[in-house]
Amino acid sequence: MINNNKAMLEQYNVSKLASEEKLKALAQNKNDKLLKEQTDSFEALLLKFMLDSAMKMDNPLYPKAPGDEIYTSMYKDTLSKELSGNFGYSEMLFNFLKEQEKQKP
Image (cartoon, rainbow, N blue to C red; front, top):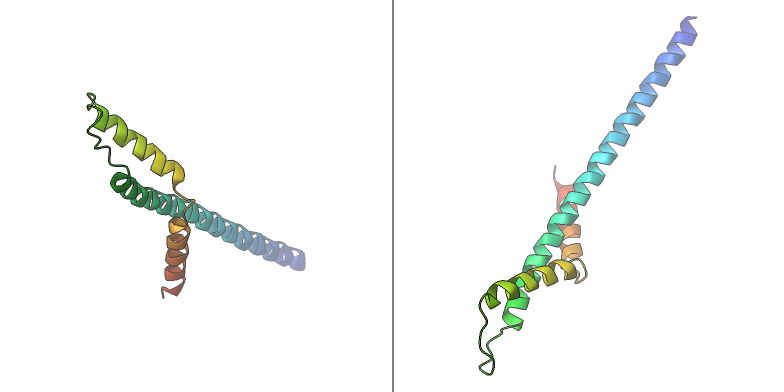
């Protein structure tokens, strides 16, 4: 009976340890997902700056319409968000930050 209780206790400890490891892994996956979202957002910001300088809409042939700057800015925002994650800046920053996290004492 004592051996049976001891075996059950050991099994409980093993399952508890396994569940704690699963929780840590889930937390790490969640942190990785959040970090990836942030690095994608940073890449979108960089792309927005590049698009702003590359797509200057100063054309003297066509007059400016009311609200033109607002719509152009919204278009560039959407375009930069859609393009983010595909240029490699996000992945490079994500990998760099993961390496920095591993090197922390």
